[in-house]
Figure 1: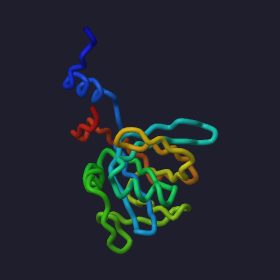
Figure 2: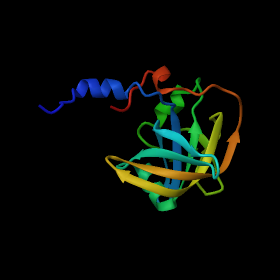
Figure 3: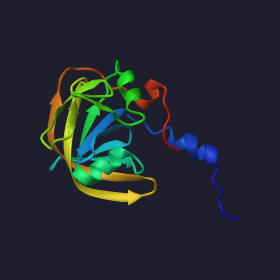
Length: 162
């Protein structure tokens, strides 16, 4: 008899993977886009590459595909409100996204000024499988504004995955 996977066990096991909490932003001809993400990892030192899983039906995904650029913001432990505000995308109002001020990065993507650290990427590859695309980005800009421990998905009380 073939093995049958228990869907609840699968969900619980996959949610044991540790994740940080990040806000990703991008910009295309339709404007600025953003979202809270947690599927992120560095994948190379030379050149510096990261891979980010972005939900395919999001405006953030559309902006990254069009612009071939994105920014990842490290959400600080004290910034659960920042992460929460980008769950449903980004709304532009002057020089703010969801009420958080930003500046333009080297790729033209919006760089939020509140997070403790950020890095900006140009897309060099992508893998489209399932309901997310894995974008591989080469880091072309980075900054650290202050020392603050990053917020994790578990510490924030959120669950995503499984």
